[in-house]
Image (cartoon, rainbow, N blue to C red; front, side, top):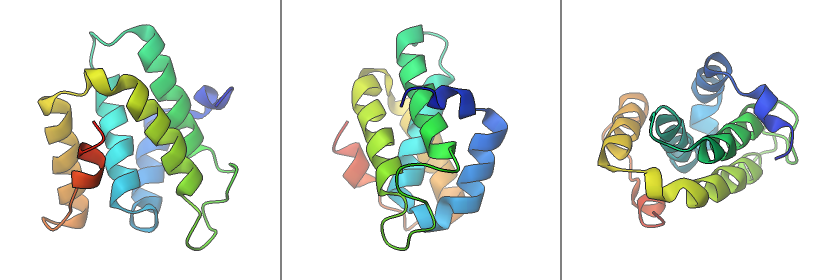
Length: 122
């Protein structure tokens, strides 16, 4: 994920999520939101924030390892990068972060969203 942090900005992050959210799927969106909300916490160390920014930068990157438009596999590399970052910063994910991420996912996709697959990994 070297160099991907330069691609991260809040504007690009929200734009990518809104544009690709349905195609990317609930797990990708929920994972990205968890990382985003951890990034907002002032008590998270700079090193952890750099990991998050790198992963979110990769997610935003328009040309990544597997193009997002590739049907069926386009977001697998994004989920991989987000998942690695999530694992590295999991200790900073608290109930407040989860609640914010779940609320946003439900706002976009409805109440039927199941986040247990990601939650079980935390």
